[in-house]
Length: 613
Image 1 (cartoon, helix red, strand yellow):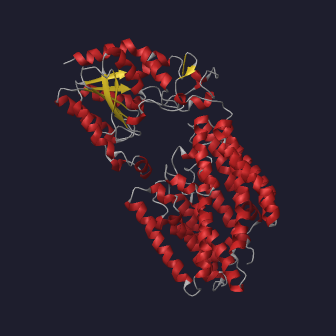
Image 2: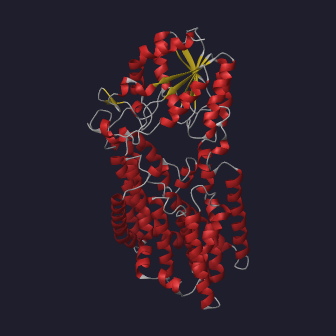
Image 3: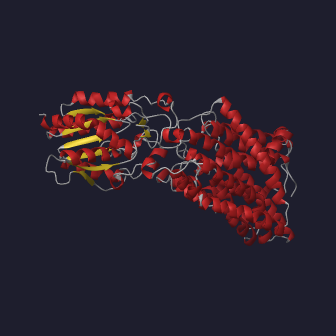
């Protein structure tokens, strides 16, 4: 088929939308539709090629897959190799283990399935994953395995009905999944949810690849309309929009209008030299822009947006790597015969696999003990429907329960130390995100939050039973201010305990930083002398005000302020050793250090709580 410069311009627009969205989603909240544009373009072009060869009797499955591999895989694997090597430098050892899992799936073009089982595409943790963008390439390669069989083995006269039927059925599938199930991530990253976007391009190719529009006027109107819809969609939808589903048909159909339009003003803009050049580089630009952003975010997790200087650096690096990739990888491997391709490309595959396999052992940041990189104590009763008992297990004193979020989790070792030395035990269950309290309304959460906390409800009954069995309840949470019902649920808990002459201890939690000290310090021993002074904390005054307001309303509520502990005098270090494993949680060393510093003060406080009437 004839080469079309305007399609290169469409690719350029698709990349620019994605690039702006990834730089700052507030600038272009729906910029992620650029990925959907790529899908429509691919469906249109590949269908046009296959049907043309089918008509001439020259189509070969082997030849088709050889060309797709040469076009996509070499640049992709080179990028993966560099991402893996960069991970050895940027990532802490514990994180390289997680990166390796993503690398395995990315190498096999299965990363969409990997990310579908985790957070939303828009989640904070995934924004630091340099392989997140590979999900769309995985879907594209998976679709290429299916499409030729549909186009070759279905007779031409039945082809529009078959493809149209699949488009409707799969659009219904993804729409139902978004609106009536809690599997937002699974739907977002699903091949079946994205196939309708390809099929729009397929259908347009079947009907229009050989036909001209009736008039230049119609062509111009369709082009202007299509471009307008794309721009409006990019601004009007956002991360909270239930997407893809039926709504994805809007921008995808708009792309279709641009694909089938003839030469006009919009066509000339798309076919202009700057747009064509960006379009030629678009694949490599897409491969390289995201890892650069992700590693910058990983180095400073508090970073929600990039400064002007950082944007310039990202843009220069993205273009430089993309140009090198396009010039020396894409163009080189695409034109090689099969024997030369196999001889030159195989070493890249082997090196990429070897680096991935050995990633944790060649980490350049050195070994950091596991207990300094994550919470290690009391995990069996955290975000699992299970209760653990700690402290002096032989104690017969008052029954104590510890509940809350991950900030309560870090108190398990703190209270275990206290209990073993001062004759008390406690039962505990904690949940990531927020305490599993009766009265917290799930309709206050976004789709992304509900997806992340979809198992939350299973812990409420266990937590309630634990509360009912206890004389004193300890609760610790970072964010009672996050949702309106959090405060209401805390008050409800206090009232329930008060009516039964039971007591509630609310902890004012530890200082929370805007950046991860472990990443900034690059190790557990103090290497950055200015870190203690320059590390900024989050404002926790709203959370503290809610705690104190609840305490003032109920006589059975007591408050213990952890943030005033002497262990934080040189925070995030204690005796030149790091006490945080991320920006907001103490590691095991820090929790036990806090227990030793607070021992006399806390035990006196606890006795006063027990003796109070």
